[in-house]
Image (cartoon, rainbow, N blue to C red; front, side, top):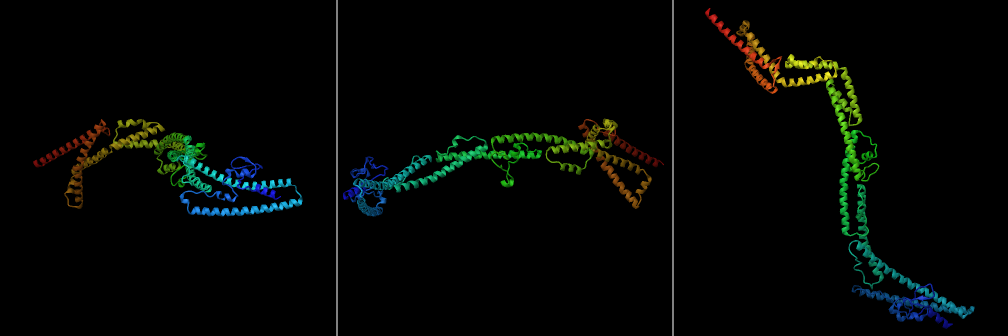
Length: 578
């Protein structure tokens, strides 16, 4: 029994064995060779060296924290030795407890088996099973720790691979984790350093990737709004995150932004123009395009005082900034401008006809202003209002036609009289003065009035001189007759107040006759000669050339004056002879 117990201890705790967990009774050591649980092979397995030893002789081979650079030696090395001594003491204590527990257990089992009467074969089988359980428990502890080491190593490799991959994408080349602990450093130290480097680089990498994605998304959004195709070279932002690539993206974004800004300004200008035309022409927003145009601009107050589009994209209520929208709005503007010209032309014709009737009918300024204030814009309602006003005025014209023709004829007669038109000159307008009353006759009469008024305006300076000369010549004739009156002569020689007034009046009359009449006469001669030279015909007044009449009147006056002088000399001689 004691021999069997010792044999069991040998199987359960073979000195120097480092076992790996296996679901089978046959185990594999770290050298990869298949073996049983017997101690001889395990004691000779070098692949398990340094992982797990229970013998005191091999305690010094238990793995210690690997030494590193000179900077980690000294105090760190002493701390590591202290930790190693503590671990050895704990392991020795555990070994003693397990050995004691095993010895106690085997003793109790032997006693119980004796009392039960279990056979040796059954006892061997039981001990074999108990040894296998203990093998697997201890092997699992070793393999769990080894797996942890492998996981850390894999984490280090994965982190380094990720760093290299990100550096390649960032344009830095296949650069790994620089300034990392040496390969013989503890795995946890190398893992933490690699993960720290990865975390630091990933923050920059993720920020660069996010920035590039933002630029790409804005580019795609602008291209969509502009109606332009997406440029393939600006789609992939996962493989190349280098600085030149970012610079290229940003430069392209700035160019597209500028294009979008210019397109917005062009669309806003067009939309503003079309909205103004639609409002002026009072065109209803029936088509989809018209509704998009009318809803495209944000209120000025919401846009800081300037007009801007509600959206760059085309929606049910906004035209957007695509090239297609720009073309459609341009065509719509051209259509509305054609319609605007047509309506302006139509309203111009109506306005001229209405204005002419206002003048013909002598419509008051207040009535004209009231009608003008009642119409606005270039809508069909404005045209209809103009047509109604024209029809109304035409009705008034028909009712007042006879009176209006009579007024124009009277004006013509007055102008003739003012200009001293002869019967031959008046014969030019005989049809106007004698024709049957009609609207055409009224038009002809108005044309005659306009023509005569123009002539009278041109002749009025000459006519005023003619009238003034006529007054002065009449005054000269009356003065000459008055001076022949004996009573008037007696009055002038008197001393009364009446005599003084008469003498003063005589002086004023003679001054006007002697000074103003010659000037007026000479001025008339110059004006009449100039007029005749320009007109190419004689200046006729009351059926006679006025220059001939003037010269005749002056010659007659001079002849009469000379005759008066001769008569006076004859009377004087006659008195002397008596």
